[in-house]
Figure 1 (cartoon, helix red, strand yellow):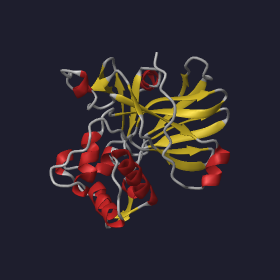
Figure 2 (cartoon, rainbow, N blue to C red):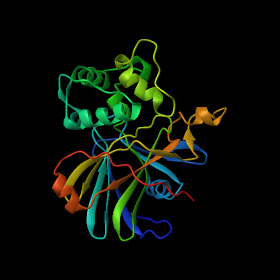
Figure 3 (tube, rainbow, N blue to C red):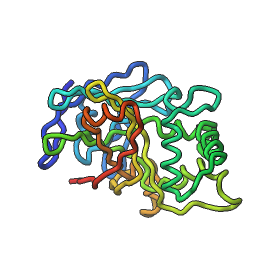
Figure 4 (cartoon, helix red, strand yellow):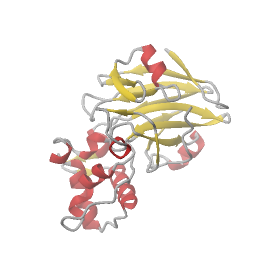
Length: 265
């Protein structure tokens, strides 16, 4: 299945080939209220258009990885969901991704983590949380929702990750134990889900801490904008896949890239 995704001066892109690999996939379509649908060819094509919705890869890190693959200018690219092995080597031992993600999120929240605080935050991130329906926080950020994938100016592949515009409740669940009793983090903090990318054989994890309002949401009709901003897919986080040459210099290093502004029709 080849899908065309283009916007404005962006080049036409060939993207497609959803591979379930024993994982899960669903699309979210509609405006402004998104509804879940299957990952049919037609739904994926619609979801990856500007303002069209998103394609959700995996679900809470369960059931194996789900991949979305294609190519740009002859370079193969694969986006995939994450599983527990991306976050932990077992027994609450974090991977480099986990520590980098938590440190970035703590910086966004204005929290300085001591080594002991980092250990506590890692344990909270990897452990079930009653405030998140019994799921561990890592599970909430392991099923990336791909809003768009586009190439601009003939190089540079940009990915829109649909997420929550106001992610303070999620960050409160991760860092609550590092705060004085009764302390609440400020509203409006932002953090995206994580997508694993393989571009021309070089791999990395991408995530961000800046979102723009998407104008869409999933769930019951919110009574006001403040509530809408806490709903799924209310924000769009844009990340950029570095060129293979840049990724090669980074090796398997972790990059939290968040740049620019989302151009929505």
